[in-house]
Image 1 (cartoon, helix red, strand yellow):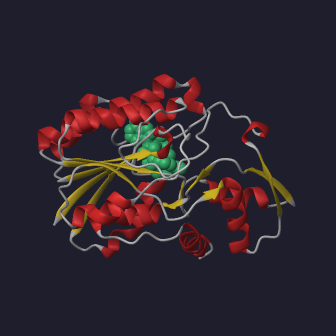
Image 2 (cartoon, helix red, strand yellow):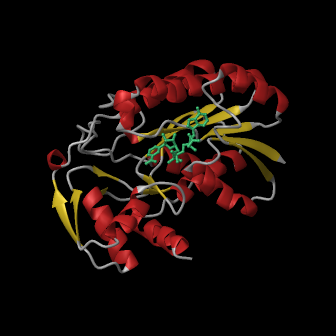
Image 3 (cartoon, protein in one colour):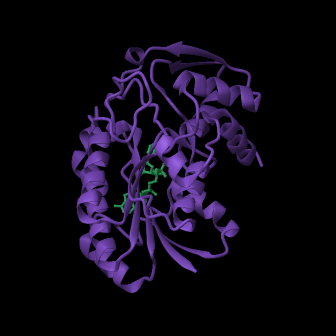
Length: 285
Ligand SMILES: NC(=O)c1ccc[n+]([C@@H]2O[C@H](COP(=O)([O-])OP(=O)(O)OC[C@H]3O[C@@H](n4cnc5c(N)ncnc54)[C@H](OP(=O)(O)O)[C@@H]3O)[C@@H](O)[C@H]2O)c1
C-alpha cells in the first residue's frame, strides 16, 4: 500500500483526485484541507509530517486568485512560496516525494510555439511569480520532486471557467469573451490521473514537466465549446483583452509542450474538447 498526502484537500484538483481514488485499491490517500494543515506554517507542517505516514505528498494547496494576488502579494507568497518550501523541507526529512503543481503563468506569453520545460520563465504577475519561486524552493530543498506545470484547469468540482460560463449563461443571451489569450483548457481529472501514474509507475525521473490537454484554444473558443456541448443557446462575441482590463496581466500565449511527460510516462493525452464533453457529462449527471 502506498500512502499519499494530498494538501489543499478541499480544492478543485484534490477533489478530482478524491473522485478517482476508488479505482486504485493499492493507494491510500490522506487529504488535509487548509484548516487541518496550513502549509505556510512551518511548525504545523513539521507536526503533521511527524505524525502521519506517507511516501508521497501531492501539493494541491495554492493561492490561486490571480487578480487578487496583485494586491495581496504577502499572502500569495506565504502560500505559494513559503508553503511549497515548507513541504519540500519536510519531505526531505521524511524521504518522501513531493509532487508540486505549478502553472503556465510562469511564462510571459511572448512565444508563438508551445513552451518547453527549458524555456525561459518570466511571469507577468504576482501569482505566476510566486508559483515560480515555489518551484525553485522545491528544487532547492528536495531532490525527490516533480513540478507539474499545467494550464486553465476546470472540472465539475470547485470554481472554474466552465462552471462560471454555465452560471453566467442563465438569464443572458449574449456574452463577450476574451479571444486574444491562447492556451489549452485542462480537465483536472486528466491531470489527476497523470499525477497518480507518476506514483503507480514508481517514477524517479525527477524534475519539471508540462501537462495540459492536447490542442489550442482561446477563452472565446473554450466558452463557445462549453455552450455548444451543453446545448445552451447563447451568442458569444470575441473581445480583445484590452476591452476587459484585469488587475493581473495574463500571458497572450501559454500553450505547453508535453513531449517530455508523454515520453516519460508513455501516456496519450486527450484532446481538450473530448475531455470537456466528459466534464460536462459528469456535471449534468
Ligand atoms: N485553476 C487553474 O486554472 C490552474 C491553472 C494552472 C495551475 N493551477 C495550479 O493547480 C493547483 C490546483 O489548483 P486548483 O484549481 O485545485 O485550486 P483551488 O481549487 O483554488 O484549490 C486550492 C486549495 O488550496 C487551499 N489553500 C490555500 N491556502 C492554503 C494554505 N495556506 N494551506 C493549505 N491549503 C491552502 C485552498 O483552501 P481554502 O479554500 O480553504 O483556502 C484550496 O482548497 C494549484 O497549484 C494551482 O496553482 C491551477
